[in-house]
Image 1 (cartoon, rainbow, N blue to C red):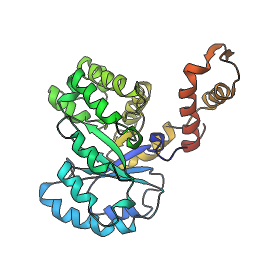
Image 2: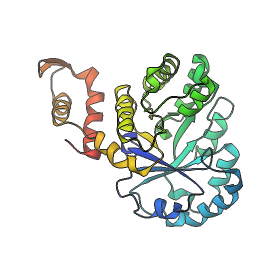
Image 3: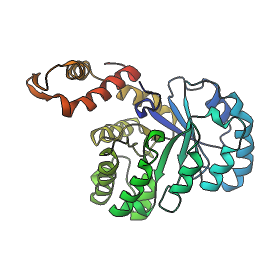
Image 4: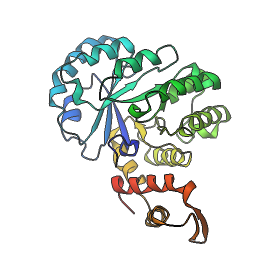
Length: 291
């Protein structure tokens, strides 16, 4: 598996930078099955806690020595990203989630990170979500740094707020015409040029079955990895990401076939069109296992 393969992210736990157990979660083995996390300096942090949170991060960066968990920071804006990049041992983290990523700040964000080894996850949360032309312009800018972009995220709650909508625990954003149309266009725009797209947050953190239903719908729509706000969702999502034996065997047959078109389990298999998906199945099996 490539180092920058988004399939390795799994459940991405968002943690406020002011969290009282931040160092234990980031640097130790508090959640052994966690594969990625984001230290949030934006929506998840009270303004009054910002300065103390920056001091805490500066103090614990040196203890991030394990590569078991992919550690990202969610910078609140370009100026804040510039501050974070000046911290000693900032090279120990995997990369950054770029909050409120838009046409007004995209170039500045990317220029700051151009000569670093950090991976990037732009988070598109504003008016570009609703305007095809603006979204495509943003896509073209992101493409100039494609080698550094792990996947692209969308601000699900920000989108619903701008639409004046709120969903219940038993409802998918794909159940509503407006949000389904917007996210569908977003997926098509970025996946068609090779980017992975992350699933949005599920707000009802005590509803395990509702969470799994939401995650299954994400996968059906081509979304992989998912923002989570509670550690109880780590294990069920890792389990959901396992590959069935049948899917794994089919993927291997497609990858290893010396024929362009052939019959496979009473279905037509066309190697040129199916190999990309088959490679993803094999990678998922390597990371999460086979059922």
